[in-house]
Image (cartoon, rainbow, N blue to C red; front, top):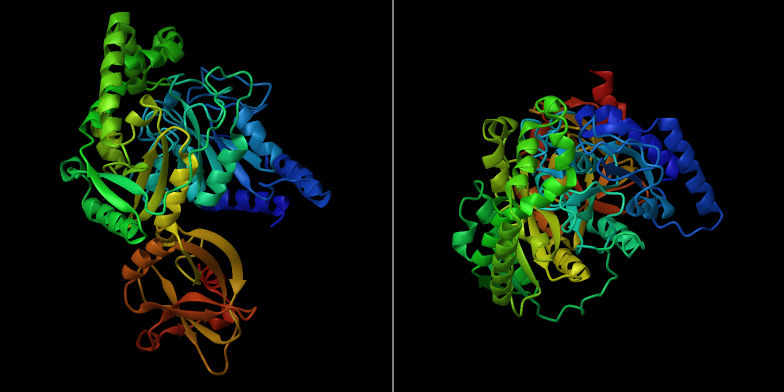
Length: 556
């Protein structure tokens, strides 16, 4: 797909899903198309543009030239004269930015609801939270509006939303991507992160953004870790540290552990209590004063805005740091150092710690009833990473109870590529699947594919060997049947799913649906949805419409 075509498709998808709370600022479509046309010209001229044809979104605490940076507050807004280095590097590689996304105000929260621009709803269940603080970026990616999106991560903001929306979230080593042009939450801990629906796209973006910019004093050059051993050792928490997970999540995590072990990884149970105690210091100690240093003066100068443009929970957290004394900080610093030393000692000999990404997926109402308590449960496994200079990577690991479940790998600084290699074992090999009905993009069951780690590949047609029927189901879905004569080509989509996700997806398929081999118009074969013959008795033949979307549009 050309860059122009991809941008047009992005805006069409944006209108289709109708999620205005995802965005704070959107570019005019024709402006984005004009930039995409320049990308296409560059490709035609032979320029190396590895992200050509991809569309991006940017969390609205990261500068994009000419677009307001609000950090989730209208009163705070300013218009930067240049892109943040992370954004500039993506654009230089051919990505087209179409807008700035909503967030928990001043990147303070893991829920995605703390914004005067509205709570960002989960991509697949609008009664539940998106996760934060990089809420809009995650949802825009999960819904297929954009191919990748930038977030930030201090306590888990680039990982928790990935897990809850069924996508990949890469949190690089602190300083690997310059934080110049980022409104700080905790300046010494903040990371620019990437969301994508597949690991390759996310990791490619991180590689392109990495490297000092000469401005950010905390930016660091890469120091790649050695390659994985033939039988790498991965730590997992002992059972007591997996208590309190959402229903079914412990079992889903156990399945991922078993799958990783089957791939040749040695699994080691580790008591991670020191790491979890260190995590509690991020908000429960003097470290919160760094948030006060970042935006506390602004909030203190505008008390009349608290409850309108300034979120009350965020304001209380940020201003609460003003009570910390220098002595408190140094005591907490020593405590963190000791906890970190003990926790990392327990991980000696392992290349990563594998955990669930978060502990539960609350509803919007549950968070509204207990905004601080609900939020604190989200960061059990994420809060310590930046405090202790860890790299981390969140990947989807299936569906539990109809909602996405994700796991996370946390490793040493600069172990980013090692974590990606391990994540490939969780997500690979891939299976290509033909869908022709309720799992198409924009249809009510598409979220099941995304939550299983699926990535859209292409719009296709079957060979002219099929009939399509409308089944009497809730939600409405079609049945595809191969016939010996009188068949026609049926429109559909091919999606790529990791083998583990494909297995869980197929296991949850209700009768009369099944998976078989489907022949495409080009003669190739892929796995595809097929329907039991008994379910087609009395069903309406809708083959003449050429596909499910056309039938639904004609009969709406």
